Length: 321
Image (cartoon, rainbow, N blue to C red; front, side, top):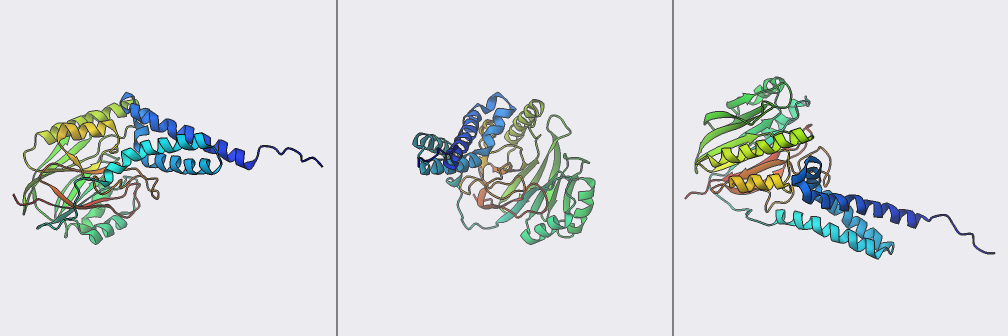
């Protein structure tokens, strides 16, 4: 009896699905190179890790299914993304022992998050010398009174929505300034520390989220103003915060080039911090950037505490000159 030709097989359907994945993630890969042209294209720059894994797995599966050309196409596009990721794992970071090591932490608490206790527990467990909190509301500042015995030096600028910022420190600081960052009542917090290794300027910032062409332009202007602010400082400087961009954005690269700041991810890896999902789905929008004169000893992403962001924890020192 002649065999009846079956309908499209599961193998063929799987191949078509995988080809669709290659077209979607490969297209987004290439669109990311046009990131200067608009906010949607710039959004495509942020997901290099996700593109890599989707394309690498698709290349493997297509190879198994005998779709050699599509497998090669997917593998090539995966390598394009990998080339952007790998440099973060190599660089100036050195796990070195330095005198007078300090620890700082930055966390976007999410103004809608009311789980204050977990953040307090995290701070007490990690024992940073100071902690920058972003999106602090009056309610968050009231809850943080619980740590004011341990962190008696406080400067807080709470806002009812997402524009609040606060610094809690064990170490005295001086010359506190709120620097206006263009629109939306967004400010950069600038303080001066006198540390055992010398003076340090600390900047905390939270530029706008670029979810439209208007906010995209605003975020870029705020990054420019941050670069100008950094240029005006004389001491070694550290900038932390939710910058609403990743290391792969052309506007992030502009910030580094125009300010002289260095990305402390170099040598430590991607370290995705947002949103509140498992790796490798998170992207690295929470940053710690430094100028010359600040030595990074260790850098890591902390555990989830109920926010859609995870904390950035950095151990550093100011080497004696």
